[in-house]
Amino acid sequence: MVVGEASRRLYERALTLFPGGVNSPVRAAVRPYPFYVERAEGPYIYTVDGARLVDLVLAYGPLILGHRHPRVVEAVLRQVERGWLYGAPYELEVRLAEKILSHVKPGGKVRFVNSGTEATMTAIRLARGYTGRKRIVKFDGCYHGAHDAVLVAAGSAAAEYGVPSSAGVPEEVASLTLVVPYNDVEAVEEVMRRHGDDVAAIIVEPVAANMGVVPPRRGFLEALRRLADEYGALLIFDEVVTGFRIALGGAQQYYGVRADVVVLGKVIGGGMPIGAVVADAKIMDNLTPAGKVFNAGTFNAHPLAMAAGLATIEVLETTDALARASRAAKAIAEVLEDALRARGVEHTVNRVESMFQVFFTEGPVETPEQARRSRREVYARLHEELLRRGVFVAPSQFEAVFTASVHDSAEVLEQVEGAVREAARALPGGGTG
Ligand SMILES: Cc1ncc(COP(=O)(O)O)c(C=O)c1O
Image 1 (tube, rainbow, N blue to C red):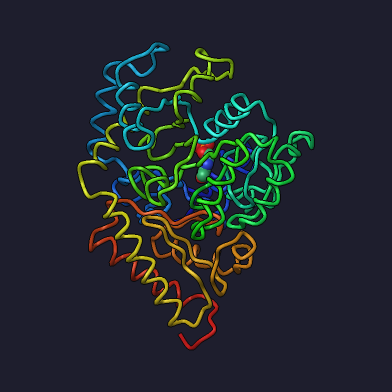
Image 2 (image 1 turned 120 degrees about the vertical axis):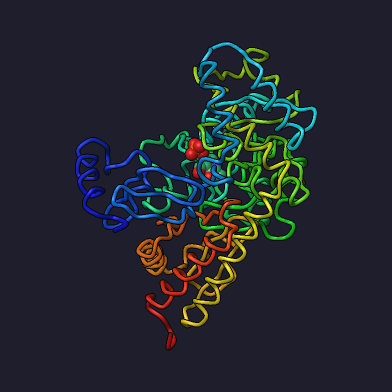
């Protein structure tokens, strides 16, 4: 049983303790109630009801090597032996910073924080402090975390639960966030013509991964670069998902477009809480204590996150882990497309390396409007049918399917293939199936 009695009992207790029964909204989207995890290992999650699931969620992205990679376990244990919080500087933060900068912005500087949310919040404050301007441009359907400036037309759980623009964000704050459709260059040009002189930053997910997966159209990121330069705004790439996943150098390397500020999270902490802001020194030195833009944190550069992150990146540098993760995603996406075609179900699969998503609509899916045309009830059914067969994909259309290096094995891929083919046959189809 994947979702059975033991999970149900825990969820009932949780409902009396947490709003909606969970501590982050998408976790509640598993129907009829979430499964509870007992432990996880490699490509698998084991539930308290005794099921083994192939994990294609990977905690929404961080676990590029799967669960409990031995090198990461060793690094974390070694750090635990030395203590896990100092409130004072130590060597590992220096080593992880050097490592990240060598791939993302040689010669630049970093500030480590504790989540992607904190990192985009800090990046936006930094851009405002650096430029002396107030407004930011963000894209409809992109998600940059759970703080006021970016909870306007947001993707991910905000879209799933029908609150793309959150209650509790004052109009005065929301009005400083100018929203344009993702992949629409003309709309950005228009907004910049009108407000460009007061735009501190254009913030974008270079591959949108919070409205399903939507890659940038050819020329889109280049146009953002040009417009940022033309109007003196900073270009912020939110690479919380893409960083160290689609390439060691992230989307900047993959698409050959340079950002002024790069925001990282997820993979760089190897599964521990982390976020990072990266930029040239002339921008970064505006942060406290070097400058006047405030940032601080009890847990900033947490030793366990530094240890897990460094071990993870070292594995990515010295093995073919990224290629293996991409290979697994390609294989699974191809099987899914094949099975849906055979079933006669209209669909579009978008994939960038080790992340993909299926939309139940005729393609292409290049804009938030097209993504929202997907028949979400069919996606929800696919999620359920896969879960029943031991494969866990995100319960929401507005998330990505992620793979790790450990999925690239005949055993895992066979299990996923069997589940995908059966699940597709269980969908309401257009054909004979
Ligand atoms: C692109 C992007 N930016 C920022 C965030 C926020 O990161 P966190 O959940 O670590 O606060 C996320 C989270 O999914 C994300 O996908």
